[in-house]
Amino acid sequence: MDSKPTPVVLEYPKGPAQVQRTSIVGKSSNSPTWVRAILPSVSDLIFVLLLVALTFGILSSRLLSDADIGWHVRNGQQILSTHVLPREDSFSSSMSGKPWYAWEWLYDVVIGAIYNVAGLNGVVFFSSLIIAFTFALVFRWMLAKGANLPISVLFLLVAASASTIHFLARPHVLSWLLAAVWFRILEMTEAEAIPGGRDKRLLWLPLLMLIWVNVHGAFLLGFVLLGLYLGAALMERFGSDTMDECAAADKRLRALSFVGSLCALATLLNPYGYHLHIHIYKYLSNRFLMDHIDEFQSPNFHGLAQKCFAALILITLFTLAVGRNRTRLSSLLVVVFASYAGLYASRNIPVSSILLVLIAAPTLSACIIDLGRSEESSARLRNLVARVEDFSQRMGRMEFGMVGHLWPAVVMALSLWVCLHHGRLGSDQILNARFDEQRFPVQAADFLARQQVREPIFTSDYWGGYLIYRLYPQLKVVVDDRHDLYGEDFLRNYLKLIHVRPGWDGILDSWQVNWVLLPPNTSLAGTLKEETQWRVAYDDGAAILFHRVGNPER
Image: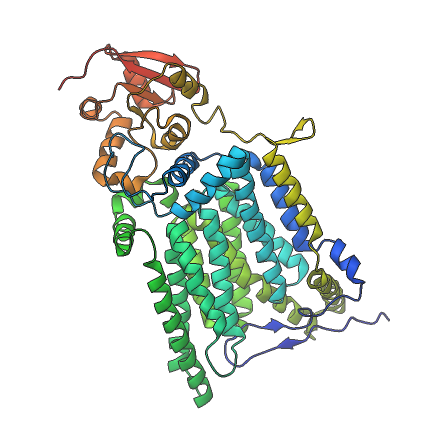
C-alpha cells in the first residue's frame, strides 16, 4: 500500500475566522542558494508572461484602445514644462479657463516623464509592468494565505481574464495595485493580530492614501474597505462571549478608527484640498452622468471577461457556502461589497475580481483538504487530494524559497532597453506602440496637422483625448472624456447633438464650431452630409471631417 503524504497542518481559530495553513510559508528550500537565485518561481513566471504578453504580445494592442491616455500625457508634459499644477482647463475651447480638478496629476507627471524619454512604447511598458506586478503579487498572496497551487493558478486565470475588460494604459491600473495592498494589510492585521500595543503595519495605510489620492479618484475604495473592517469589528464587539474577545475587538476598533482618521487627513494633501472631495461627491452623485457614462454601466455578460467575472462570483459564493464556518465576518462583508460593485459598474470588475480570489482561493483549498480527510470520502478521492496537496506543499516551499527573481529582472531590463531604443532589439522592430488606425482618426489627424487647422474641432468624447494628444496646442477640442469637467448641462447638449435631436444645429452655432470630425456611421455624420453649409473635407473610411462653408448664424 502506498504511504500517504503528511497532511497539511490546519489551525482553526475561535469564532468565524479564516482557516490558515502554516506548513509552507517561511520554509526555505534545501537547494543551494545559487540555484534558488536562478530558478524562477511560479509568481516570477506569471509576472514574465503577463509583462511580455502586454508589452510585446497579443494583449499589447488593448492598452492603447482608450484615448484618454492622450490628455494624461499632454497634461503631464505641461506640468513638467511649466512646474505648475493645473487648476483651469487648457485643452478644450468650450471649458477654457474654467476650474479643472486634475486629481490624477501625479500619474500624469510620471507618465509625461516616461513619454518624454520613451514615447508610447514607454507608456505601454509602464502600464504592463503595473498590471503584471499586481497579478503576480495577488498569486503569491493566495499561496501565502494557504491556497494550493492548482487552485491559485485557476483563480488567477479567471481574475486576470475578467480584468482584461480594463487592461488599458490609464491611472486606474495603479488603483488595482493599491487596493490589493490595502486589503492585504487590513487582512493581515486582523488575522495575525500582534499581542499588546498598536499594530504598526496599519500605519502604512495613511502613506498609501497619500499616494492614492493624487493618482486616481478610486482612493475612496480604501475608505470603503476600512469601513467594512470597522463594521466587522463592531459587530464582533457586541457579539463577543468573553472578556478577552471583547477587549480584542475594542482594540481593533480603536486602531482602525485612529488609522482611518490619519487616512482622512492624508486625503487633504492634494493640490485642491477639501474642494476635491466636494467635486468628486458631486460627480459620483450625479445620476445623469452615472447613467450615461459607459464604464459606470452594469456589465454586459455576453462578453468573455464579464462571463469570467460571473463565474468567479458563483465559485466564491459556493466556496463560502461550503466553508462558512471558516470565513471571517470581514471577509464576508468584502465578498458582498466586491460582488455588488462589479455587478453595478463594469469599471469595478478588476478590483472586485482581485478581492474575491484573495478570499475564495484559500477557503476552497481548505475545503478540499477537509474533503480528502473525511471518512465519508472514497479512498481514491482521499489519495488524490493528498497527492495534490503534497505537490502544492512542495511547490509552495519552492515558491517562497526562490530568492533571486532573476528572470523578472532580466525581462524588465530587456524591455526597458527596447523602449529606450525606439522599440528595437538589434535590427528588429519588436515594439511599436501606437493607436489603432481603425479605432482612432489617425490619418484624419495627420490631415488636420498638414492643413494647419487652428480652430476648435468637435468630435466624439471618445476621440477627444486622442486629438488632444495629436494636435494640442495647434487646436483645441470642444469635448473629450473628462466628463466631470464638462458637467451634466454640457453633456446633455452633447448627446442631443450626437443623436441629432431637435435643436442640434443651434448647439454647433453656440459652440462656434466650424470643424466636425466623426466616425462615418454616426447619425450626425449622415445628417451633415445633407446640409448645404457643411462639406466633406476629408474621408478615409475610418473618420470623416466636415468643414462649415458658411458662417453660423448668430
